Image (cartoon, rainbow, N blue to C red; front, side, top):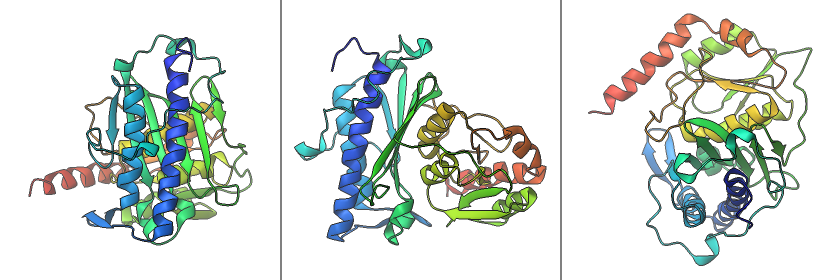
Length: 316
């Protein structure tokens, strides 16, 4: 790949190729049937597909871009040996010809943090709800999300997978965006991690329909495809690797992702991994501030209290 191509465009091209390979690994493990399930914490599962997909992506990206910082959900994987066919050095060509935003032309590897969720929607994966599963990679520069990749291993066409990418200031690819509903309010939220705080936030919005699905990546795709107006998760249970990539893709299209107070998250290497203020995302064309104002103040407070309690319990 020509080194004169800006680093961000090359990195996204490499990430798309690595995510595609990780998706095949996820499908192959499901086909074999031995998922190797481990419960990391209550209702927080990891499978062999999570571990292998992450090793594939980290090995592929770290060998091409050794000075970037990579943070994966399943912990450090840089020293793990991987099969040679898991290391992807070919690149997707669709992003290489884009015009790189001027603000990203001089980005260096040391400025970049890559956030990886190798299998978003693990609970759904173990239950065979594979259409909920995504591979997420977010690229942040000096703490700001600038590009993202969302790969659906079982997405269209015909369940063979699709990869959606976005670069803020350059556009998105891999998907045909649609406008959200205009005559009704459709909200998407968690399928398996609901509680009273989550329900209070939903009730305050008075939606006409609630789509309860797995995975942050899947929910953001629903916004992009025009199937929902907003994604609401009033909980501190989600983490930076869940939202960095989806936020970048959604923002590249004109949507918005923040915490429940309307504050954007930072993605520096040393930030708190938990999304301490929950997640509120809106489709392109929606008034994000309207949704922020509709969320009750007690919900916003209880999310931070939930995080404080989780942190306190982690010491015991």
